[in-house]
Amino acid sequence: MKISVCGKGGSGKSTVVTLLANEALSRGLKVLVVDSDESNSGLFRMLGFSQAPIPLMELVGGKKSLKKKLNQPNILSETQISLEHIPARHILKKDGLMLVSIGKILQALEGCACPMGVLSREFLKKLHLREDEITIVDMEAGVEHFGRGIDTSIDGVLLVVEPSLESITLAEKIRGLATGMEKRVWAVLNKISSEGLATKLKGELKRRQIEVIGVIPNDQAVFEACLEGRALSHTEATSQTRDILDFLLRAAI
Ligand SMILES: Nc1ncnc2c1ncn2[C@@H]1O[C@H](COP(=O)(O)OP(=O)(O)O)[C@@H](O)[C@H]1O
Ligand SMILES: [Mg+2]
Image (tube, rainbow, N blue to C red; front, top):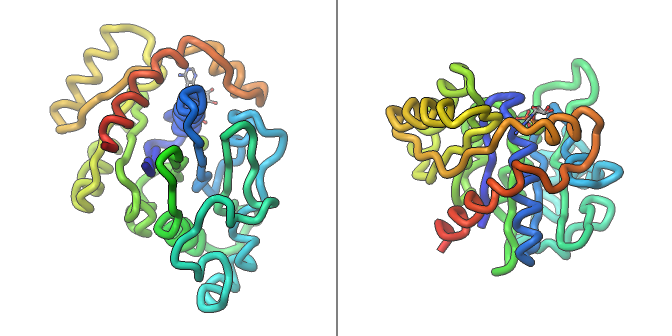
């Protein structure tokens, strides 16, 4: 199964990706996390790696030569990409957890991120998973990835919604775009401080035809781990992730 995790910047996409990855690992699944957010770079820390992988963009010679390279023999010219075919320096591995990164914007005036979108789309399209493998994509914030077709080969879109009007409005927009592409969409509420707030947000999303499949509390331990650049460990938020993964795995059948 390939799941993309989308939503507003700061809503908790990388946090939810990490919580889901940890939960899937604890069930003996192999997990590939794809970092497709070209702006933020902290995901590797949340997952417990000490450094980021070398972006796949480097593998195809960088943004400038991507177009040219797409026509030459390289990993992307295969019809299928299996995880063991990704060169070691581009994929970090630890106890069943794997991380690849598409690319990061590092310099001013280096041009737009469209080539990274092309690479994300092609990589996800060709990525071949075995039964015991799951891919979770940490998407860039906002809706541009839909325009770039990155979600084309995704089985379902998981929206992360924090308690803000912007986040709800963006969720509605994403639902429209994703259903237009015949993708299934579910939401997870994040940073929730009370049951009353969860009920209110569920109502708001229901009115927008968005199904909420989980609620992650506002968790001080998550906040502190993020602030200090530590791996997310077992916390209150972890236990809530169990039901979310259960739902996603059932939906995959
Ligand atoms: N459940 C949570 N409880 C407390 N703080 C959270 C939670 N989820 C996210 N955060 C805080 O929000 C910040 C942004 O989360 P992050 O996952 O990086 O968002 P995104 O990937 O959507 O930009 C984190 O640095 C952390 O401080
Ligand atoms: Mg992020």
